[in-house]
Image (cartoon, rainbow, N blue to C red; front, top):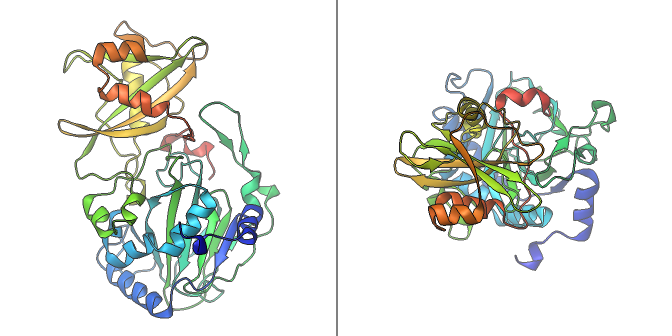
Length: 398
């Protein structure tokens, strides 16, 4: 990372103390105008939700694999943005969400919230931040972007287990929201736990903005990464391709759970009898999307909870993403649920068996996907959180 692009100590302290940082004039007026032109064109054909037809009142979202559009790819890998992000994350960054919004004049904005949400690929990492670039002045006319300074410090760790869990702040503890007076072309970096809101403006013109999210490479989203496609990867430069850790164009049609029973001696892992293909496999099977929202593509926790309940008769309260692997007919997304032997629920039926990692290597071979998943799960230095399903969202940070 070039030394001149690193944030100075004052900037980093401001971010740590307040939960946000502003870098002025990152984009030129001509770059801002070109982005507005591109987004307006895309909003008329490729925005979410598809039922919203421009210029009907509402919020038009351009996201996900639409980062393949050259101007959006350039923002995703913009050197000033990426270096500032990585300076604050203290890690190489992964792009978990490429999002642009156009709010038409009648849109009502959004209420106060923070975006750490354990059921969403874009919000379930334990170390991520917003990189927001307004393309108009975020003022009273267009609608400001308000932040509660220091609110990121109010989120509390629940315990010190290997997989971390957090409790939300109490609303009455939040500091008063302020307007950081963002101008077109500025960059706002906001911590994942910083509370913010976006009141409606008064202008009769559109409000444009980029709202990308990046996580630390050692803190994967608990719900799993958004699955970018080869077109999105190809749009990035050779240097920028590292921002997309997951990229495939095969269907994500399988989901499996590595169940780890921790003991004082050695962890054990559960296999179930695979009646369709023969032999033994991880619990799971055909998965499904929980939401239609494009930025939440890839979350499979709810479907995997249902499959494991059917197969083993146990409720899995949380799980955390491991990796994606190729199968004969697509991709399989792997999660893990880890608990001590004393707290591990007992599977029902006689079609499951426990094995140590060494036993699985002998049974399956060291190159088997299950053995690789265990190795990935046990990798040192990875910060993991507890992913939840959409059905569990009411206990989250709504």
